[in-house]
Length: 456
DNA sequence: ATAGGGTTAG
Image (tube, rainbow, N blue to C red):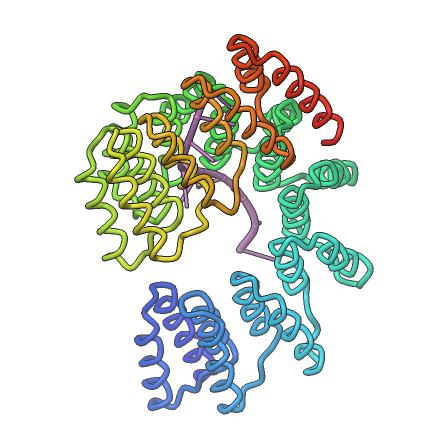
């Protein structure tokens, strides 16, 4: 009895060190315990494995598993679930499947958590059919699905483009008398909104209000983002002030959503206020937050501060990504520093981001606006992938320079690539050709545009 | 455990 109690205490102690990411202290406690005659048990090792998965990855966790077996302790379903979660987090599908296999071979029955994790992994890798098979297995087996099963399903269906199925599953739950959790509502509202189904999203939001759940900060951030995404800026700002006045705590997500929208609206001063508040409140900055802040600095022309943050990212052990570089390049272009932008673009290419389409688009647009159209054309020709942004910048600028035949050529290759381009852009080219006397060219272009519409 | 945040043209 005394022994069991001690092991429990040992495990509680180890769990708190693991949670604080002090794994060497956890190990030291194990050694002390052994010295005192208190041996680690399966819970001890499971705690360690879970923490290793989280902080150091699956390989580290597997070496703990090895030590566990050496110590003569057999893994159980919890052990495997931790390993599965680690593998799923890193999208290591084949590892997930291997773990399932060895679990079965060891005679350990997977539980709902195991299945949920596998399902989530399939969804994350864009394999909704496989995920659905797992879901069916849960239903057909004598395990019963838990609320997370449905949340993972609804989220996965939304993320993979099956919004209607997600909505259907949600309604099915309600028909069976199950009360959806707040998470479920949040998942569905976000999914519907991203699919452009604003009416349905609003309906679910209303139902959430009638459900007895209190919306949380995530609900507010989600809905706010929905408004901004659909360019309903005033409504988004209303939700922002409601969130503030109701005393919700802002985390990095809420701040970044608000700051990003304010920058887009040109409210740089307000964006800066929120930025200062965010830092003052001690929000730990991750890469997305850094990028958001760098964007604010760029848009207010404070490139010293922007580049300082760039250094801070790297010295803090994070790595700039394509967003960081795009924000810098676009910022320099918009501030009229074309040479600086070109320099950063070259630098970006040398460090391996040479297929950053958005950054190239920003550079093209910047060159165009600076009147360096030929330079922009050269860059355009060197690009392997182009999209409608690329074409729109160039076509508009060529029209401005009254080079309508060149614009027409580009417009055609854009349409031939199956890319959508605004009617107003097409009309700019057509009208330009007509007004400058190229009537037959205009006619030809118009019929080709019509043909293109039929084909795509 | 499952939910929310960052970049470009007109």
